[in-house]
Length: 200
Image (tube, rainbow, N blue to C red; front, side):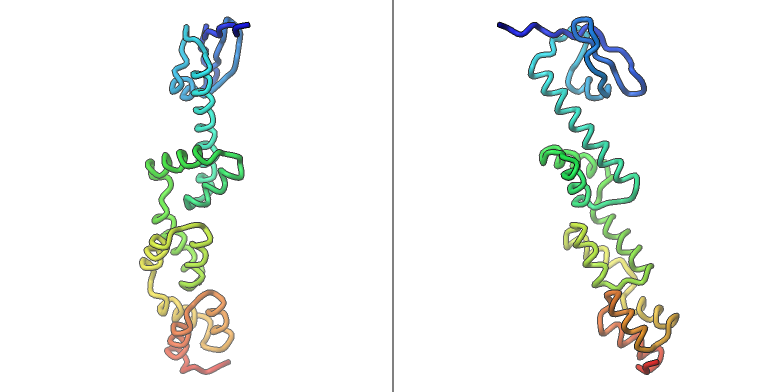
């Protein structure tokens, strides 16, 4: 037996950016207005299988965008971090890719900008280049963006000298610098500059 035809008989405003769809004179569901428009839901059209699938795709796309932009409201993130977050939320691979492309086109996701901001933040908190590089790589940032972020920083030896000037030129400071990812040469140079290599 053939399925009865479902005809959109009304679209009613249901709050900011949302619309209530009526099928055959009965309330069916409330969806974002953008999803209805993009799937060509309009008064008098038949909600056939193809149109219903288009609406489902749009609803998935908007849900993925909501998840990603919600994460970006908390802090800037790399594309890989957002992709992982979307995957944990059950967003399909094609929808993840489309969401990231949309956000990259809008300038909301930019791994070079992210690498630069994250590198600066870690450098200000006393991290050396090795720790910064490791942190960015763990966040899925491509090598080229990692190197661009590091290149924009004040040179590591100068940052190490500043820490030695503040903390002293003893063994404790040298160990601290090593633990924070500073290169051996930068540590030795900073300590020699400040205290001739003496150990407290």
